[in-house]
Length: 164
Image: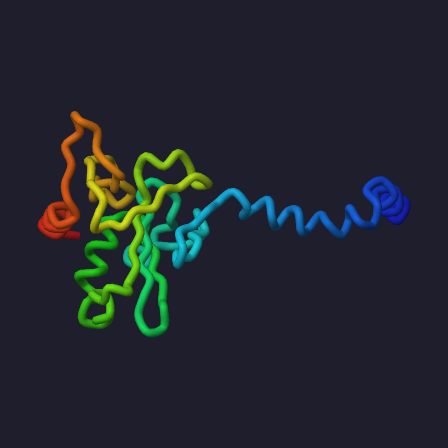
């Protein structure tokens, strides 16, 4: 009975269709996401924040840092985790201050995981939004005219003063 079903299925899709199915599934899974040059893709709901170990689920608050002699990557679920991790790890990773070190934060206004806008955190504006780790700041490519915002330096000071 089982062999009859297999033969019928192969007859319907053909051998070429059977061979192309895994390729099509692979391409469908990654074709729509685009990542900035040098950024490693984030496996949503699977990758964990290097600081708090929480799964990176909310695309609007994700961040990544990449650099050093071994080109290592660190991923974060909240820009506050990035700020604290940078502060805590500066002595261990002195290369973080090098110009070649790359950082990205998700723009809060990104429509979805497959249509992300990534910003340099030092150039972004920060707006008040409830975030996964309750630092409650989100990166934005530019605040609206009635939306108060903070610079990176102001956001960093506010986050570190809050503690956690």
